[in-house]
Amino acid sequence: MALNDEITVLSSLPALRGFEQGALRRIALSVQTRILRAGDTLYRRGEAAEGAYVVMSGEIALVDAAGNTVALARPGDMLGELALLIEIEWRETATARRSASVMRVSRALMRRILGEFPASAAAFQVEIAGRVSALSGELERVRQSLLALDGAAPGGDETMGAAP
Image 1 (cartoon, rainbow, N blue to C red):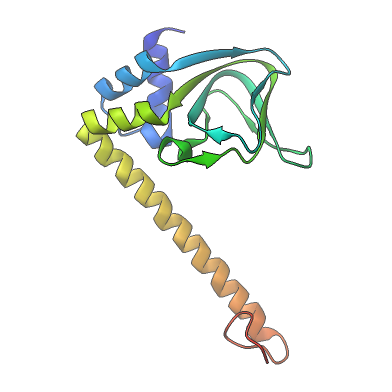
Image 2 (cartoon, rainbow, N blue to C red):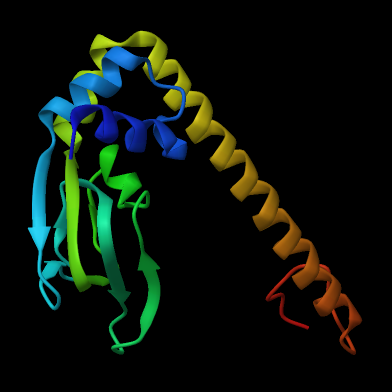
Protein backbone atom coordinates (compact mmCIF):
# COMPACT_ATOMS: atom_id res chain seq x y z
CA MET A 1 0.00 0.00 0.00
CA ALA A 2 1.31 3.44 -0.88
CA LEU A 3 2.28 5.90 1.83
CA ASN A 4 -0.48 8.34 0.79
CA ASP A 5 -3.06 5.56 1.08
CA GLU A 6 -1.88 4.74 4.59
CA ILE A 7 -2.05 8.42 5.56
CA THR A 8 -5.59 8.62 4.16
CA VAL A 9 -6.68 5.62 6.25
CA LEU A 10 -5.01 7.01 9.38
CA SER A 11 -6.63 10.43 8.91
CA SER A 12 -10.07 8.81 8.66
CA LEU A 13 -9.78 7.16 12.09
CA PRO A 14 -11.81 9.06 14.70
CA ALA A 15 -8.90 9.13 17.17
CA LEU A 16 -6.50 10.58 14.59
CA ARG A 17 -8.87 12.70 12.53
CA GLY A 18 -7.50 16.00 13.87
CA PHE A 19 -3.84 15.08 13.48
CA GLU A 20 -1.47 17.22 11.45
CA GLN A 21 -0.29 15.81 8.11
CA GLY A 22 3.28 15.64 9.43
CA ALA A 23 2.17 13.55 12.40
CA LEU A 24 0.17 11.20 10.18
CA ARG A 25 3.12 10.88 7.81
CA ARG A 26 5.47 10.06 10.71
CA ILE A 27 3.04 7.41 11.97
CA ALA A 28 2.67 5.88 8.51
CA LEU A 29 6.45 5.75 8.08
CA SER A 30 6.97 4.18 11.52
CA VAL A 31 4.24 1.54 11.76
CA GLN A 32 4.85 -2.16 11.42
CA THR A 33 2.75 -3.92 8.78
CA ARG A 34 1.64 -7.50 9.25
CA ILE A 35 0.06 -9.80 6.68
CA LEU A 36 -2.31 -12.47 7.96
CA ARG A 37 -3.67 -15.53 6.19
CA ALA A 38 -7.17 -16.80 6.89
CA GLY A 39 -7.11 -18.42 10.33
CA ASP A 40 -3.99 -16.60 11.58
CA THR A 41 -4.28 -15.14 15.07
CA LEU A 42 -3.34 -11.48 15.45
CA TYR A 43 -3.52 -11.55 19.27
CA ARG A 44 -5.10 -13.61 22.03
CA ARG A 45 -7.44 -12.67 24.84
CA GLY A 46 -5.47 -11.84 28.00
CA GLU A 47 -2.25 -10.87 26.23
CA ALA A 48 -0.77 -7.45 26.90
CA ALA A 49 -1.71 -4.90 24.23
CA GLU A 50 1.32 -2.76 23.43
CA GLY A 51 -0.46 -0.65 20.87
CA ALA A 52 -3.31 -0.62 18.39
CA TYR A 53 -3.89 -2.28 15.03
CA VAL A 54 -5.42 -0.60 12.00
CA VAL A 55 -7.08 -3.02 9.58
CA MET A 56 -5.95 -2.15 6.07
CA SER A 57 -7.50 -5.08 4.19
CA GLY A 58 -9.43 -8.25 4.89
CA GLU A 59 -11.54 -9.05 7.92
CA ILE A 60 -10.61 -9.80 11.54
CA ALA A 61 -13.01 -11.67 13.84
CA LEU A 62 -13.00 -10.72 17.51
CA VAL A 63 -13.89 -13.80 19.53
CA ASP A 64 -14.80 -13.82 23.23
CA ALA A 65 -13.84 -16.42 25.86
CA ALA A 66 -16.92 -18.51 25.01
CA GLY A 67 -15.88 -18.72 21.35
CA ASN A 68 -18.52 -16.29 20.09
CA THR A 69 -17.66 -13.76 17.41
CA VAL A 70 -18.57 -10.46 19.04
CA ALA A 71 -17.40 -8.14 16.25
CA LEU A 72 -15.81 -8.05 12.82
CA ALA A 73 -13.09 -5.53 12.09
CA ARG A 74 -12.83 -4.37 8.50
CA PRO A 75 -10.59 -1.97 6.58
CA GLY A 76 -10.46 1.39 8.33
CA ASP A 77 -11.19 -0.03 11.80
CA MET A 78 -8.78 0.40 14.71
CA LEU A 79 -8.40 -2.35 17.30
CA GLY A 80 -7.11 -1.50 20.75
CA GLU A 81 -7.27 2.25 20.56
CA LEU A 82 -7.05 2.54 24.36
CA ALA A 83 -3.70 0.68 24.25
CA LEU A 84 -2.24 3.75 22.55
CA LEU A 85 -2.48 5.49 25.92
CA ILE A 86 -2.36 2.91 28.70
CA GLU A 87 -1.41 -0.68 29.41
CA ILE A 88 -4.35 -3.01 28.84
CA GLU A 89 -4.97 -6.66 28.00
CA TRP A 90 -6.86 -7.79 24.94
CA ARG A 91 -10.46 -8.67 25.85
CA GLU A 92 -10.99 -10.90 22.83
CA THR A 93 -8.92 -13.06 20.48
CA ALA A 94 -8.46 -11.56 17.02
CA THR A 95 -8.30 -13.99 14.10
CA ALA A 96 -8.22 -13.29 10.37
CA ARG A 97 -11.40 -14.59 8.71
CA ARG A 98 -9.72 -14.16 5.35
CA SER A 99 -6.38 -12.77 4.22
CA ALA A 100 -5.79 -9.43 5.89
CA SER A 101 -3.17 -6.79 6.47
CA VAL A 102 -2.86 -4.59 9.55
CA MET A 103 -0.65 -1.73 10.67
CA ARG A 104 0.55 -1.82 14.26
CA VAL A 105 0.83 1.56 15.98
CA SER A 106 2.81 1.11 19.20
CA ARG A 107 2.15 3.05 22.39
CA ALA A 108 5.77 4.26 22.33
CA LEU A 109 5.29 5.66 18.80
CA MET A 110 2.07 7.42 19.80
CA ARG A 111 3.79 9.01 22.81
CA ARG A 112 6.60 10.29 20.57
CA ILE A 113 4.09 11.69 18.06
CA LEU A 114 2.07 13.42 20.77
CA GLY A 115 5.26 14.95 22.16
CA GLU A 116 6.52 16.15 18.76
CA PHE A 117 3.21 17.48 17.40
CA PRO A 118 1.43 19.61 20.03
CA ALA A 119 -1.54 20.44 17.75
CA SER A 120 -2.10 16.72 17.15
CA ALA A 121 -1.84 16.09 20.89
CA ALA A 122 -4.47 18.78 21.51
CA ALA A 123 -6.79 17.26 18.89
CA PHE A 124 -6.30 13.83 20.45
CA GLN A 125 -7.11 15.24 23.90
CA VAL A 126 -10.32 16.84 22.58
CA GLU A 127 -11.38 13.55 20.95
CA ILE A 128 -10.73 11.52 24.10
CA ALA A 129 -12.44 14.12 26.33
CA GLY A 130 -15.49 14.01 24.07
CA ARG A 131 -15.67 10.25 24.34
CA VAL A 132 -15.31 10.32 28.13
CA SER A 133 -18.08 12.92 28.32
CA ALA A 134 -20.36 10.84 26.08
CA LEU A 135 -19.66 7.73 28.15
CA SER A 136 -20.38 9.63 31.34
CA GLY A 137 -23.72 10.77 29.91
CA GLU A 138 -24.63 7.22 28.92
CA LEU A 139 -23.71 5.91 32.37
CA GLU A 140 -25.88 8.59 33.95
CA ARG A 141 -28.83 7.55 31.73
CA VAL A 142 -28.33 3.92 32.78
CA ARG A 143 -28.15 4.97 36.43
CA GLN A 144 -31.38 6.96 36.10
CA SER A 145 -33.10 4.00 34.41
CA LEU A 146 -32.02 1.67 37.18
CA LEU A 147 -33.17 4.11 39.83
CA ALA A 148 -36.55 4.38 38.10
CA LEU A 149 -36.86 0.59 38.01
CA ASP A 150 -35.81 0.33 41.63
CA GLY A 151 -38.32 3.04 42.62
CA ALA A 152 -41.11 1.31 40.67
CA ALA A 153 -40.63 -1.98 42.51
CA PRO A 154 -42.74 -2.56 45.64
CA GLY A 155 -40.79 -1.15 48.58
CA GLY A 156 -38.27 0.37 46.15
CA ASP A 157 -35.62 2.73 47.48
CA GLU A 158 -33.90 5.64 45.72
CA THR A 159 -30.51 4.14 46.55
CA MET A 160 -29.57 1.13 44.44
CA GLY A 161 -28.79 -1.89 46.53
CA ALA A 162 -30.02 -0.30 49.76
CA ALA A 163 -31.28 -2.73 52.36
CA PRO A 164 -35.00 -2.37 53.22
